[in-house]
Length: 571
Image (cartoon, rainbow, N blue to C red):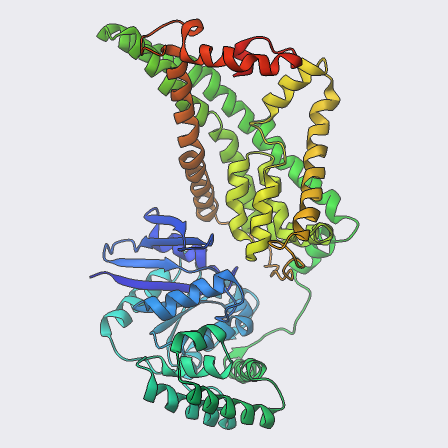
């Protein structure tokens, strides 16, 4: 029986870097059931029976975003054998808010105190023994970027999973609140057969609607719990959810004073100095345009373009077809089979792989920008503009990627937490011209406008106008009505990108592109070959007598007013 270990933590805490280090290439990427939130899992290197589940980056277990709902459902309902909680040591106060919730679930927790190298560089010290004793779980210092401590954390998590020792969370709240929670917990234990009664009691106190529906308590018991909550609210002079939040931060602040020793007082960091320039109201957009121009210049015009030309012209235009042709001739295969392999399969594979060098360079550049921390700034910069049209700042990244290829552009919408914003972005991203549409735009420009240069340029402005108008119209509909979700995004400190992490991100995106776009392109190429090589009697014929030609002659009159009287132009 396999052991399941969950990786949990805040966004930008180094969770994904640790996941990549622990699992290597043995990863499966999909979606959580019923939602478009990315699901990642993989086998721990050297342990075939240990599954690592990389949960979405979250700040709490409150059910406000899809990521929080998905993570909570997995931890509470599927019950992993242990949890690795990745805590950013350089921002420990905020990260411990999630930790205090994870230890209440009833699953053994080991804390990976990550970015410990940054903590030491700042001259600070964290007493991991005091921290572990206070939270009731082991704390191990790690640096996921450098691969330090990750293996030790995983081994400790495996040990906790195998021990099967019942886990009891420490009581971290004030005496008055603990009394109220104890009363609710007594009701839970008497009426619900669940091991995590502590966590359920806290959620019932917070009036968590999903938990209220899940536990299915009788009305009289709900009334008793409500009386306990109201009584406590009167004592604290606040609502129940705010009481829990304030109590958590109160506990964390006291704990931080005991375990964190700061050498220097808060000072302006290098990241702050850079942000004063790159997020400046006046300079932000010109800097962004310059960086994006450089990205596309490298990935499309120079390095990526040269590699694509070599793949199309030399590899699949000359070397592969000629050698395959020689092999087929020496084997004496039938003409239709030669045509199928050369014009169907190899042409289809070449059409797919011809895009890969440019896509790989684009994904590499974007992965570097993302890993160094600049991508978060782009979303922040664009939010002011996009909110006027009903979109979030995070919608800009998919639209930007969509100018290179619509498939990865749509795939990148997974980073948008709000479901309505995500769906709207998927719809409007397809309006921007991508590399596959450029030849069509050029064809129309040449056929109808005598090759006027302004046609291709205006296509982008038309696409942008379509995005803006569609965003405004869609926000008027019931499905997308309401303001965009509040834009809250952490701006992580700038740092040098890790080579392994950047290459892993590039490979994952390229693999997804080849798998999703490649399948369609290859099948379409084979289908076109079949239709252009056979007639309705399934006899191999010239293209002029093929199925495709007969279909083309039928639809050609429709396009005759455009001057396309040739059936080939029509199809």
